[in-house]
Length: 472
Image (cartoon, rainbow, N blue to C red; front, side, top):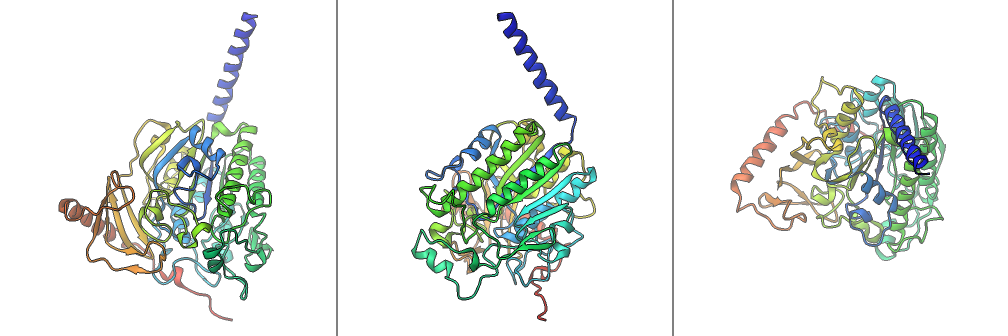
């Protein structure tokens, strides 16, 4: 019996080794799961006490939880442009003082000359799919199918756009009623498949579930070739919707219900990878496009210990909960070094053996040494842009603000008498200004910001975002 057990164990280990080797002979798969307006403090693995996220908690335990991971802008369109291209959105015209994001009447979008992650991976014939919210242009020439994706299923812009006049005011109701439930018919948002509208208004009560089903179908259809899936949930951006199976499931109210359904979706995607024995050959990244929309009170999320939220260049606006998972590539642990969505294109290219563009300025770094546990993050600096303006810069632990927006009503500019300096290691909440104590650090960061802005000479006009379709 002992001999049989020993033989069986040895055989099992050999089989596992052979399976692992067969995966490493193949190009890796990549999955990005991107949420909308999820705050740093909205997951239980990032400290939330009432929202249950067991699948994301398991993902963090089996992979890497990054505690200092940034998006390049604290609002939707420019943040997504940066993720797709590895370039600060000011470079590609996707950050503007005139219009903060693209709207249904915008005629612009991500320029065709920009190179997306999908286009980089196409160098090695990856199957590519974009599922969920796009928000980089709703006209055919700007949709995912024009940016390297084989297919698209989702909504082209935010789920609160195309508001039907006369419908209940969501902001006013959210202010007074934590349990206010919107109606999908109040938002005439189109659901698209490739370049065609297939449903209008989109049934947002079932949209997370349908995104999940489409994602799993894509994985199953491409299990024998390398693939890249970009799953960009349109929630928890307001208006909040959840499948009936999840309504009332969270102590946190409707917002918690929404997050727990997204957590379920993550679990479904990871399980499908495991069932198809693709987990050892796939890297999954979970993150958010910016911080929580605080003005919506309980219908918005939480930035946890961070200051402010969406629309601001405080940490709560641009530091987001991020997890990397990939049993064959990612060494488990908690990473306290800096990273950014700007770095994903470089990282995926390094791991897949593809090449990023060399004919333009890129702003990302290769994080693969950190993922494998063999090195440190090359990112030591970060620049905080919004509305086409540089607001702050970080080098090491020090962050200098030279411009600010009001923490709740982020459309309001706050005039500063002078810059403010914060030590983000000892003061994660940006409460204690060190400007007068550290003049040498202030001078260094000012010089760093000056050099960075001078390096933006290649920036495209911001009217790409501000341009509006001519009225017919």
